[in-house]
Picture (cartoon, rainbow, N blue to C red):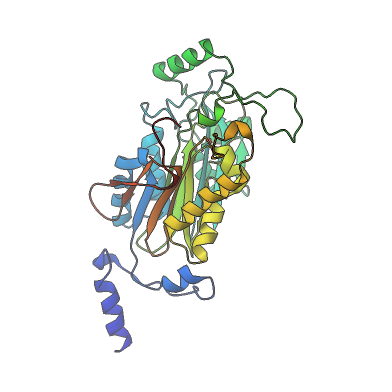
Length: 360
Ligand code: GLY
């Protein structure tokens, strides 16, 4: 069989025959996934469950020939703009003082570049600002007041991100607050049972992560969030930290996360998932390994149930260069949104380490 025959066969098996191109250059010697990826390109978009509708828009953009980064950012912008999603952007739940602070990161596989903002106030699309940090500065992460000033310098308008609904939920928490905050009393660092009454481990952490492979086989990702509800002002979670809440390697794949950011900051989960995939693990297996890593690393009694399992949940979403995808969570229940070229996206269940019973 000559070269042109092989090429035709590959194109025939592509998800999008008309647009399929071949991978090839520069992929040798970088692990099993890359070696096996010299096949037809299969575009895919994956996100956390709250991106069900928005992932369909991202796939539409990919089919139109857009770069994966444009598609994933357009996807999460829909959720950032939605006042009914109280975990992201406009209408996100605020910090303990009633102020919304947002975190976001982006990573562009083909150029190996990334950008992020953390604890930014009054700007409803932090993912767009994160992209500008990547494109218009020599930095990767800008935080707080500096991030707001940077956004304003690029023409972003300040607006109050607290909706009537999110303010009312915050007020209810404030009015019924007892041990439900993040402050710990002085204690011996060796003590494993400090702060056992605190509920921060199981408090709301929404977020959206979205990753995609485009028609050229390039990979990008984004994570954006209002973070942990009622957090200490200035608290930064995993979402804007490349390697923790998001990581992309254009020759391997991408991974991102939602859930308890503190666990990911300590485990550097997203970069680990991409590394596990580079060693030949499927996206789902790699996500499960990240869950196991967190379970092994969590030692504080206040974070563990009576069987020594983490009380909190962390969810992971991953894709590889071949367009394979998967998700996993520490506890059963979460689902992820995926689109492999259809008009409508679908939800699939995350694999899990522990099955959630009625009350744990
Ligand atoms: N994973 C989102 C956060 O902890 O802020």
